[in-house]
Image (cartoon, rainbow over all chains, first blue to last red; front, side, top):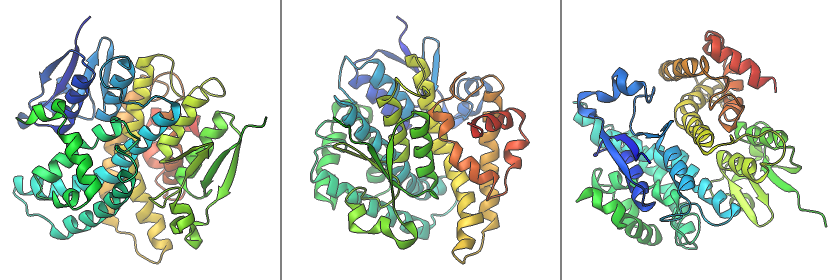
Length: 211
Length: 205
């Protein structure tokens, strides 16, 4: 069987998230480098795979699939019988996985990405950080993380007592916040969020990408 | 033995609630609609926050399960009631993956600019503020780029995920409805032949 092809970039945390998922599911894959610094993701060859011109995209036989959250969901389902079970065991557990996946996508990711953009991308492109925008988004994230703190005081992981897609989805952005934005205090100041972050970020399949 | 009916906590004016209502109807599922009076701040009261700590609508209760985030709710309903009503998920693993892909596109590429336009052109004036035209223009620009991709996709596929109406199309209903009506940005849709045909189709279900 042809190995799954992952078109991505090693320094793209969303690509790394998909690779992490593949490793957790013990699935063979081939990483095809899309050289972001040279604009490979905006060239016709890549746009033919993913018209939105972002990484990653996977190819599995006849299926071409993009959107990292959709990719990991597909992998979790297709390989449900092997490796880490990311979806829970009942319909209700699965529903809670999707709920917290949506929370990540709609409430956690937008402010986290804005912070990252202001602190890292903007200066990289010669501009200056909009501190007011950073502060506004830090405030939003604080409110969200207070809810996480409450949740994680009752539940080992977000969807329940099992590591799921919902936790996996938080790895890329939180990694950036802690390691590239100097906002680790958002995590470390909250006892249960901190314990959860320590746990999920030390999974070998994630850690290995940063050594 | 009567099975407990799904309880939907929400408000008809909320687009996310509307999306869940649409899904319940498509799946022919009985429900009990508990109105959360947004104008009275009911969604921020302890009673509601105990259900949904994010203090937004909708939230559903199905037996022991309490579930929020409208996109997670419709996914749960589509799965639980797969055997009845419209099949919103696709039949093969590959079809289901494409449904998820276009659901994510809606959630991350369509919804943000669309909701910003709604906020600026309708909600802000309603609350006594003024529309920031520059922000509206930026977001129309973003939406134009996304809709160009939709136009290309829909020229080859009747619906977003394939030749079947799915959650991905359903997720676009409430926001597009507002864009076309309250925001008066219908030209974004009508100027694109295939997007227009798709919109006419899905909005007349």
